[in-house]
Image (cartoon, rainbow, N blue to C red; front, side, top):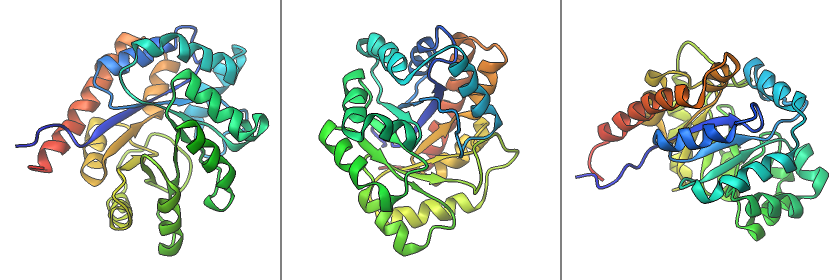
Length: 257
């Protein structure tokens, strides 16, 4: 029998979106998140769709900074039992310098980093800084990535490889792209690292489909839309639990280890 789940849910929250935003971290954890992705808001989020852009704008309007968000995370780190992953843009990383940025992440209790606008050709400095700080740098593969470049990306990724399920920006979608399973299979053929699937996973049904294709399922825009509409941490605890149940179903369907 399967001894422990091999697939996990990775819900997202924009750091600083509300004054009590770290309560969402605790609610996600209570609902069964396997890891949590924290967006560090940036004024020009090029791969993010309208919902995440609006969430970032709301956080920035509150006056949050990378330092203030990391300070908030540090204050709850002793209560966190699941890995935390930062998602942000290269401008914020290089503004501080990659070594200092990664050191600050590690000090706050964050163990992973996703930088969607950082191509593998330009990742050497961040890769070295992340390794020095004990941070997993998670690189992205798109449906159109050719095989040679895919192999290079997975060779430099740590912790997971992020499969971008669709071309375009993040956001809720009505259906789960069939091409995602093919992309996940290509990645799995090139590495033993878990495959993280994101961009457009919105419903429990889509989370289950993503779980069948990959290993870690990211849900972002659907949750941030609910926060923007006024959903409380307790509201999202129930929604994340439903998403987690869908991923668990995909895990059981995968059969014995």
